[in-house]
Image (tube, rainbow, N blue to C red; front, side, top):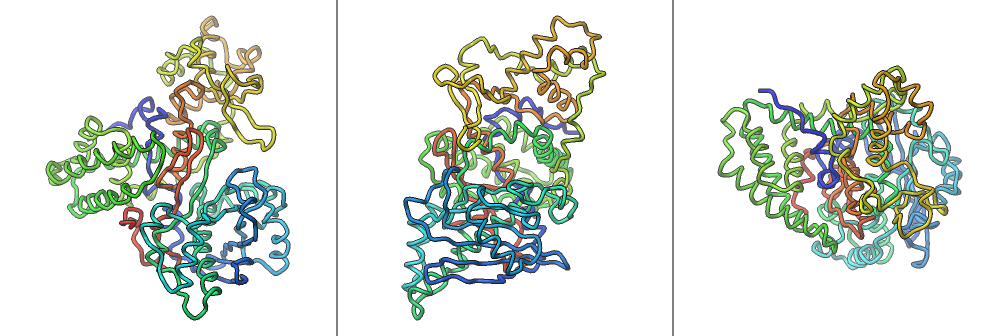
Length: 553
């Protein structure tokens, strides 16, 4: 039976993209699968009684070694901030290519805590910093120092001891350029080194809190229970700086979404289903109910989505238990047709993630398709004609071409770069100054402008000649021809309208990272948790890949 890929005009709406969940395709999970057989070691722990100092961890396989160097610093409560403009953090980290020498550590000690103001070298691959969740961190340290384990329910409300505020790579601040390492097989998946850094930072948080507790009360202190550690992740605060990424990298966006859509298509085409595979899916769905119960947020927007997810998840589980016949041919396709009619987007996309769980042979080959060489498709085909361009626009941008940008609500916002930190921001065009500095992120508006502009041109006019007088639309002409080959390259929505929810753009990207428990703090920034429930480094070899659905108490 032939199943079609889902229509980009359906999938690429922001409300749908903002309902995506982690899956086997997510970068942190593919990282753990790749590195499960590497040798993990804590190479150095030099912390004082307050937990300040240096810690080094490593992953090794044959001659390849990656080392995380951690610098724990003393700062005041007034200096602690999750904002990107902060200048001091509780801890700073860099992932080092190989084994750092004493000279390397001394050099990095002077630079890594400074982050953007410091200077890295080609030996450093990624850079990050993080702050304690002070109340929870101190609570855990106090409990352990008194010989007691912390209350799991109290920890579940936060889910982490530290949260990162940025993770940098690919040549920033002197870090190694991507071209130096891109052909290494173990890091071929997107953001794999960034995932390694965050995962090892998680272990640092446990080692630091254990060390502080032991220093406080050497005779009575206990170490944090491995089960409790496992159910803690790393938090992250993410704002608008992430949103333009998915607009500015259309080919990469296509490859991420395409991998997911191909996985869904292939699963729907499975003719004969094993009962053990269905049992695994049902177990994941049931286990995730507890995780969703512990998904805490004060955002009315997110609470509404969570409540709909809970209700729909009950329906989905009931369908599997009473109506799903795994002996019938192509039952997954029947499941999807039912779910599309019966479930909201939040639960439908959750289901798409969960049904991948048994199918390593389908998912694994797709991981290597999720990177992109964007330079290959950057050149505009100048010999093509206006007729070719018009056909692409009418086929691939149907819904966008219906938007009336003469209406105030469709043109309300503009994206700009803040002067103080060079970070993307969003402002109201009719209330705020600076719209003349607008960034080219209003793709829907510019596509409509392009379509209007070519309406009076001859069909035979070449794109090269059209560009001579219309260079201001070069960016969307390039994008249009990219969508000809890559159907999921474009968000099929208005990124400057009054109904825009920027956190949908953030959540899309973070779902592919593998984040869970999205907690919007406004419509422009949110907190998340990564690696919650993940095996500890010394458990990687013996833990199955479905840990993310384990009950997190």
